[in-house]
Length: 193
Image (cartoon, rainbow, N blue to C red; front, side):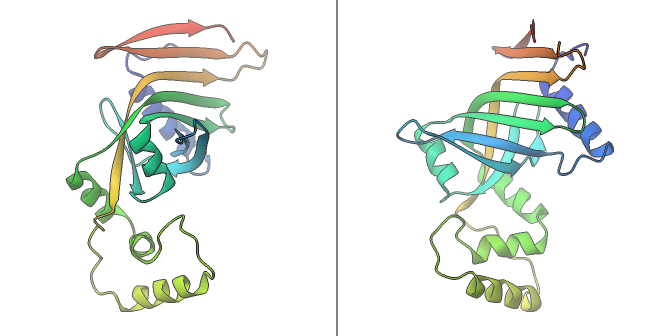
Protein backbone atom coordinates (compact mmCIF):
# COMPACT_ATOMS: atom_id res chain seq x y z
CA UNK A 1 0.00 0.00 0.00
CA UNK A 2 1.85 3.06 -1.26
CA UNK A 3 -0.44 5.73 0.14
CA UNK A 4 -2.38 8.09 -2.06
CA UNK A 5 -1.96 11.81 -1.28
CA UNK A 6 -5.71 12.04 -0.59
CA UNK A 7 -7.42 9.40 1.57
CA UNK A 8 -10.92 9.91 0.15
CA UNK A 9 -9.63 9.13 -3.34
CA UNK A 10 -8.12 5.96 -1.94
CA UNK A 11 -11.43 5.16 -0.21
CA UNK A 12 -13.24 5.62 -3.52
CA UNK A 13 -10.82 3.20 -5.18
CA UNK A 14 -11.23 0.63 -2.39
CA UNK A 15 -15.03 0.77 -2.66
CA UNK A 16 -14.80 0.23 -6.42
CA UNK A 17 -12.38 -2.68 -5.94
CA UNK A 18 -14.65 -4.24 -3.31
CA UNK A 19 -17.60 -4.03 -5.70
CA UNK A 20 -15.55 -5.51 -8.57
CA UNK A 21 -14.46 -8.37 -6.29
CA UNK A 22 -18.09 -9.19 -5.49
CA UNK A 23 -18.23 -7.84 -1.95
CA UNK A 24 -21.89 -7.37 -1.00
CA UNK A 25 -22.97 -3.75 -0.52
CA UNK A 26 -19.45 -2.30 -0.81
CA UNK A 27 -20.55 1.23 0.17
CA UNK A 28 -22.17 0.10 3.44
CA UNK A 29 -20.52 1.55 6.51
CA UNK A 30 -20.98 1.46 10.28
CA UNK A 31 -21.93 4.99 11.34
CA UNK A 32 -21.33 5.74 15.03
CA UNK A 33 -22.80 8.71 16.89
CA UNK A 34 -22.76 9.59 20.59
CA UNK A 35 -25.91 10.27 22.60
CA UNK A 36 -26.52 12.77 25.37
CA UNK A 37 -25.24 10.47 28.11
CA UNK A 38 -22.01 9.80 26.23
CA UNK A 39 -23.17 6.39 25.01
CA UNK A 40 -22.12 5.37 21.50
CA UNK A 41 -24.77 4.26 19.03
CA UNK A 42 -23.94 2.39 15.79
CA UNK A 43 -25.94 1.51 12.71
CA UNK A 44 -25.11 0.49 9.14
CA UNK A 45 -25.85 3.07 6.47
CA UNK A 46 -25.07 3.49 2.76
CA UNK A 47 -22.57 6.03 1.57
CA UNK A 48 -24.29 8.15 -1.08
CA UNK A 49 -21.44 10.24 -2.36
CA UNK A 50 -17.76 11.06 -1.88
CA UNK A 51 -17.04 14.75 -2.29
CA UNK A 52 -13.56 16.26 -2.42
CA UNK A 53 -13.35 16.64 1.38
CA UNK A 54 -16.47 14.94 2.71
CA UNK A 55 -18.65 11.86 2.73
CA UNK A 56 -22.39 12.22 2.19
CA UNK A 57 -25.20 10.15 3.68
CA UNK A 58 -28.97 10.59 3.92
CA UNK A 59 -31.37 10.25 6.81
CA UNK A 60 -34.75 11.18 8.12
CA UNK A 61 -34.05 14.14 10.41
CA UNK A 62 -36.24 12.84 13.27
CA UNK A 63 -34.13 9.70 13.78
CA UNK A 64 -31.93 9.04 16.79
CA UNK A 65 -28.89 9.43 14.55
CA UNK A 66 -29.91 12.94 13.47
CA UNK A 67 -30.87 13.97 17.02
CA UNK A 68 -27.54 12.75 18.36
CA UNK A 69 -25.67 14.71 15.69
CA UNK A 70 -27.40 17.90 16.87
CA UNK A 71 -25.98 17.37 20.36
CA UNK A 72 -22.57 16.05 19.33
CA UNK A 73 -21.39 16.26 15.71
CA UNK A 74 -18.35 13.97 16.26
CA UNK A 75 -18.76 10.64 14.48
CA UNK A 76 -16.82 7.50 13.63
CA UNK A 77 -17.25 5.37 10.53
CA UNK A 78 -16.02 1.87 9.72
CA UNK A 79 -15.97 0.33 6.27
CA UNK A 80 -15.14 -3.39 6.34
CA UNK A 81 -14.59 -5.70 3.38
CA UNK A 82 -13.62 -9.11 4.84
CA UNK A 83 -13.45 -10.56 1.32
CA UNK A 84 -10.49 -8.27 0.58
CA UNK A 85 -9.05 -8.09 4.10
CA UNK A 86 -9.51 -4.34 4.23
CA UNK A 87 -10.99 -1.78 6.60
CA UNK A 88 -11.19 2.00 6.62
CA UNK A 89 -11.65 3.77 9.97
CA UNK A 90 -12.76 7.41 9.85
CA UNK A 91 -13.37 10.05 12.50
CA UNK A 92 -14.80 13.46 11.79
CA UNK A 93 -17.60 15.97 12.22
CA UNK A 94 -21.06 15.69 10.71
CA UNK A 95 -23.43 18.45 9.69
CA UNK A 96 -26.79 18.62 8.01
CA UNK A 97 -26.11 19.58 4.39
CA UNK A 98 -27.99 22.08 2.25
CA UNK A 99 -31.60 21.31 1.34
CA UNK A 100 -30.84 21.19 -2.39
CA UNK A 101 -28.49 18.23 -1.84
CA UNK A 102 -31.14 16.38 0.17
CA UNK A 103 -33.65 16.91 -2.64
CA UNK A 104 -31.16 15.77 -5.27
CA UNK A 105 -30.30 12.58 -3.38
CA UNK A 106 -33.95 11.85 -2.60
CA UNK A 107 -34.75 12.07 -6.32
CA UNK A 108 -32.00 9.50 -7.01
CA UNK A 109 -33.63 6.91 -4.73
CA UNK A 110 -35.79 4.26 -6.32
CA UNK A 111 -39.53 4.69 -5.89
CA UNK A 112 -39.87 1.97 -3.23
CA UNK A 113 -37.32 3.75 -1.01
CA UNK A 114 -38.92 7.13 -1.62
CA UNK A 115 -42.32 5.74 -0.60
CA UNK A 116 -40.83 4.08 2.49
CA UNK A 117 -39.57 7.51 3.57
CA UNK A 118 -43.06 8.94 3.16
CA UNK A 119 -44.96 6.03 4.80
CA UNK A 120 -42.79 5.21 7.83
CA UNK A 121 -41.40 7.33 10.66
CA UNK A 122 -38.21 5.29 10.96
CA UNK A 123 -37.38 4.30 14.51
CA UNK A 124 -40.71 5.30 16.05
CA UNK A 125 -42.75 2.83 18.10
CA UNK A 126 -45.51 0.96 16.23
CA UNK A 127 -47.88 -1.84 17.21
CA UNK A 128 -48.17 -3.53 13.82
CA UNK A 129 -46.12 -3.44 10.62
CA UNK A 130 -48.95 -4.50 8.32
CA UNK A 131 -50.68 -1.10 8.02
CA UNK A 132 -47.39 0.41 6.84
CA UNK A 133 -46.96 -2.40 4.31
CA UNK A 134 -50.52 -1.91 3.10
CA UNK A 135 -50.04 1.84 2.66
CA UNK A 136 -46.68 1.33 0.94
CA UNK A 137 -48.17 -1.24 -1.47
CA UNK A 138 -51.15 1.01 -2.21
CA UNK A 139 -48.89 3.98 -2.98
CA UNK A 140 -46.61 1.82 -5.13
CA UNK A 141 -49.63 0.83 -7.24
CA UNK A 142 -51.27 4.25 -7.47
CA UNK A 143 -48.44 6.81 -7.45
CA UNK A 144 -48.03 8.34 -10.89
CA UNK A 145 -45.15 10.69 -10.09
CA UNK A 146 -42.42 10.29 -7.49
CA UNK A 147 -43.13 12.04 -4.18
CA UNK A 148 -41.39 15.26 -3.26
CA UNK A 149 -38.56 15.07 -0.77
CA UNK A 150 -40.11 15.30 2.72
CA UNK A 151 -39.15 18.43 4.66
CA UNK A 152 -37.82 16.31 7.52
CA UNK A 153 -35.52 14.21 5.33
CA UNK A 154 -31.97 15.39 4.74
CA UNK A 155 -28.41 14.85 3.69
CA UNK A 156 -25.59 14.51 6.21
CA UNK A 157 -22.09 15.60 5.29
CA UNK A 158 -19.17 14.13 7.25
CA UNK A 159 -15.87 15.98 7.05
CA UNK A 160 -13.13 13.58 8.13
CA UNK A 161 -10.38 14.53 10.55
CA UNK A 162 -8.66 11.14 10.36
CA UNK A 163 -8.79 8.28 7.88
CA UNK A 164 -7.00 5.01 8.56
CA UNK A 165 -6.58 2.50 5.75
CA UNK A 166 -5.98 -1.01 7.07
CA UNK A 167 -4.96 -3.96 4.92
CA UNK A 168 -4.67 -7.48 6.27
CA UNK A 169 -1.41 -9.40 5.89
CA UNK A 170 -0.96 -13.17 6.22
CA UNK A 171 1.93 -12.71 8.64
CA UNK A 172 -0.30 -10.51 10.86
CA UNK A 173 1.95 -7.50 10.15
CA UNK A 174 -0.99 -5.59 8.75
CA UNK A 175 -0.49 -2.41 6.75
CA UNK A 176 -1.90 0.69 8.43
CA UNK A 177 -1.81 4.17 6.96
CA UNK A 178 -3.20 7.01 9.07
CA UNK A 179 -4.15 10.25 7.34
CA UNK A 180 -4.68 13.23 9.63
CA UNK A 181 -6.15 16.47 8.35
CA UNK A 182 -3.73 19.36 8.78
CA UNK A 183 -5.82 22.35 7.73
CA UNK A 184 -6.66 21.63 4.10
CA UNK A 185 -3.81 19.15 3.59
CA UNK A 186 -3.45 15.58 4.81
CA UNK A 187 -0.46 14.32 6.82
CA UNK A 188 0.34 10.62 6.35
CA UNK A 189 1.76 8.36 9.06
CA UNK A 190 2.47 4.65 8.77
CA UNK A 191 1.41 2.78 11.93
CA UNK A 192 2.78 -0.44 13.38
CA UNK A 193 0.33 -3.34 13.13
